[in-house]
Amino acid sequence: MSSARPVRTSARQSALREQERHEQSESRFSRISSRSEQALAGEYSDATQGQGLSLATSASLDVTDMSPSVQPHPIEGYSDTVEIEPLQPFVDPDISHLPELAFAYGFLVKFKSLLKQSGPLPDFTIEDLETGMISVTPNACVAEIHANLLSNLQNRKKAVDTHAWQKVLSEILDTKQRTGEYPYENPLRLYKSYYQVEPRDRVEILKDLIDWVLQEGVAIRSGIEQDPEAFSVEPFGTDKEKWVYWYFGADLEMISSHLDGALRVYREKALRSKRHIWETVASDLDGIKALVDTFKDSTVRVEIELRDRLRTDIIEPIEERSLQNEKKQERMERKMQKIAELHEIAALKSTRTRSSNRTNQVRYTFDEEEDFEEEDVLYNIVMASRLGSIVSDLRNGLGAVRLRPDVRKVTLRYSGKSDNAGARYFARENLPRIQYNNPSILVEVQKLKEAGVVPELTVEFANSDVKKISCSRIQSSEICKQFLSVTTDAPASSA
Image (cartoon, rainbow, N blue to C red; front, side, top):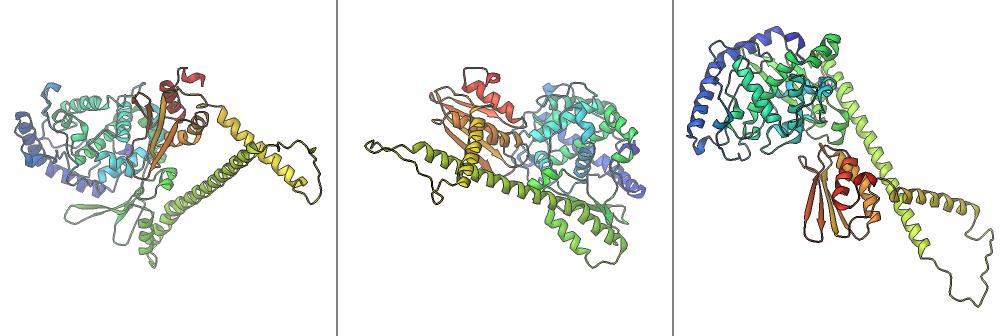
């Protein structure tokens, strides 16, 4: 269904890709079959560890034109799964240059509004997707994306659970293998886990899964039929060397919060040798600015249009959003400074006492030169009002409860990137109430800068017992309720 695909190149480029796929199909299948037979016979050598399967190397976006010589060979039953030790980090895990990954990301961004109808879809950047596709440990971003796509493919009313998506995916691959739509061995039958599969093969599976969703997903097809132009993707521009540039968009809020590696601009070119080149030309804002500079003195119309569009559609919106975030951060810092000053004022007022010398009568005299001028009185009233509002918020709301006496320490660990929004809001809204109402409990916050950190809340008790609460992709209120359920005797809802 070429009309339903969000990413298409010219007819000539599609024909070149189809021929390339046809030429490589038999050799791929022969190599994959050989390895699968060795795997089932238990003949893996140390030299093969970490290499994985190679399902396809083509950049074709069409799954309907398969080689007739390729026949599916399904592996019956999960009992034949090969016991393979967990893989170490892959030798060459770079997949950022793969057109299939760009196709997948472009689809997920363009069809995000339709995909959410069948289940939650995380907010993520292309960097988050790349990180998940090469991870050797379970990744929340990859799990939620696959669970969503599988839900759309099967047109489920109830979304596929993120803990069962690998089994559902394996069943789908078996079905597509029997119908000839997936002419390779099912790698999930050969490995114990999806995260042992070679990264390139994961990308191919993701691309195939998206192709099937485009063909069979009711929500996707309905959206395309209602507004075909809204879900079409055209090349971003071209240059005089006949390079075709692609940019599939991104969430400005996600990008402006961490600019490094969160952007991708690609380009492709068809060669006379019936091959094509696909490469990443920019992976961050500085790279895009450098690309614009290469066309600075150009007088070619297509390059001028490309240069202007890179500025107006990518650079300027991101810089504007980043400036807004900086101003917001400055306002937050000023607010926190004022709160600190209010606490100091409150501490000073609470320590003032009247002199114990009662022999002389206390006299209050007010003069224009005294400190108690009208402006100072009004200022104190305003400051006291603000302080009262802050204290009231700390004494009320979710988290403003007394914890059990055996709670000794609370540690929150999170990152400023990816799926840590719930943990950030918990640290800002709920944790201050917990600390204010439980001053004897040690509270530690570990805010990390690196990506891929799984947010986690750890509670330590007097008997050396430790409880860990995962904060990944859940709201701050839910985090607080789970925390209160293990640290208080009363139900969390009553807090």
